[in-house]
Image (cartoon, rainbow, N blue to C red; front, side):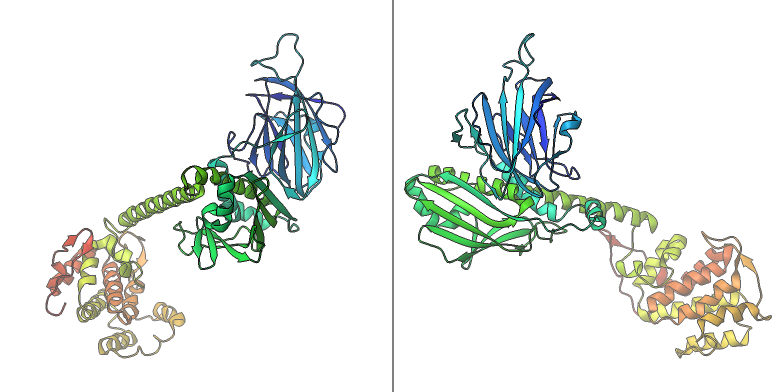
Amino acid sequence: MDDAVGVYVSHHQMLIGTGTGTEPADLGIYLAHDDLVHLTGESAATVFTGVHSGEVDVRVRVGTAAPGDGLAGWSVASEVTLWCPEGRLAVCGLFGDCPDALRDVAVPGPGLVRLQVRGRNLSPGEFYAEDGPREEFEIHVWPVVEDVEPCTLDPAGAPEPWPMAGPGAAEYAVVRLVTGANPRAEIRNLRRHAPAIAPPPRVDVRRSRWVPPDLLAALVERPAELLGATPDGDDLLLPAGDLAVRLHPLPAGAAARRYRWTWERAAEPFSPEPMTDLPDDRPSEVELRVDEDTSQLTVRHLAVRGPDAPLLGLLWDHVLDRTEHLADSGTAPPHPWQAAFAATAAQARERAEHSRRVRRRAEDRRWGGRAPSERVRTLPANALALALIDRPLLDALERASPEAQRAIARWAAERGLRAAGLLDVEWIAEGFAAVLAGTALPPPFDDPAALRQRLLADPRVPQMTIAMPHGAADALQQAVAFGVIAGAALADPLAAAVETTYLAAAAHGDDHPVFLADLRAAFPPLTAPDRTVENEVVVIDRPGW
């Protein structure tokens, strides 16, 4: 692009993006930066202008290698590496002003690209002088296979050390690696339906730092201190929330250490719902090497996923920056991402506890004041329906002994059948007799599919409608009461007692309070008070109960 294009900037900021835009670049500014360019994501950077608001002239030049024309005539220049997944680049203002010529610039990809941003005529004030020149920026882009340090260049082209990224950038990087592999449900669903894409290319990451000579050799001898890792036999473990990185030593020379880097699940995850997917299921290799002549410590991380390279670069920036703490005090603070993962896990536990309380309150309301035990809630019987009629009775039935529960089921079944006039029908009476004897139900009770049809077709069966408690106003009484035979035959005595008590009460229609009063009169322990301590039922021991 030979012609410059005007871009309207706001708050001194202009944005460069090489990503798809489906996931935001949310690394904050002032974390990985110099005075000109801030890294704001693995595929995004922010360029800082002198003018607060107004148009600046921007030109993008795409090449196959680093520009060789020098920096003569430019006042500032910086370089940074980005991941480019689709071979396109966009330049826009802070609030989305994106000229058509800069909206979709073809660049190398998928892969890493190096950006060199040059600027001149930067305004010393907030706004342009009346007759002053417009600010100019030139962005050179070329493909690379190694992510090296971002750097600040002076007009002569001599590199200077990139300022410390600080722990915030490393925190972002590691959290992004882990959460990127374990996205929210809606993002995961979108990815599931997205077209299949080829695996990203493998690239390298390289970082170097000057280290005091007296510390240099010691760090190689004690790599756990440098890396902030925990020894695990011969290996080192680098914690990352619910995950961890295992560094297994490999053969190396005297002035170097080599490790196989492998993501794995942590032995003790942080979260109530742990993130278990790994950022990369393939091992990579890390090399730590010292140069005693220059007192340089260099880290090379080989064969990493292309999208991960800028993030791993921020991690290694942080690891190497820890050498200043080690030189000053002999110790270094914990890795910042662990506190971030702990805070996220604490929030997740708080949300889970809040959801549990909300569900408990809803369950309490559903059951008429206090949810019963797990056994009652999962009982294969009409426990909830009985609770809506007479909740204290449901609790009393649970406290009863199995023998008493079985006796109550038979008593209630007889009352329900008699109220519906069903005991006068011979085959129904035979079925109830089998319940009283504790034997298998005879035909036709062994064919549930045909049973209801026979009940409705038998001319000896009365047909009367009733109003169900909290239910239909025109239910067939005989169909309701008929269910007590199968209910009383249930193998679980509590289920049998609850099912038959409810069906028998329902078969009495509007007179169900009389039935319930008679049940309590027949079984006095059912009127025993329900003493509770901290919402837990205290079982009242009585003979036979």
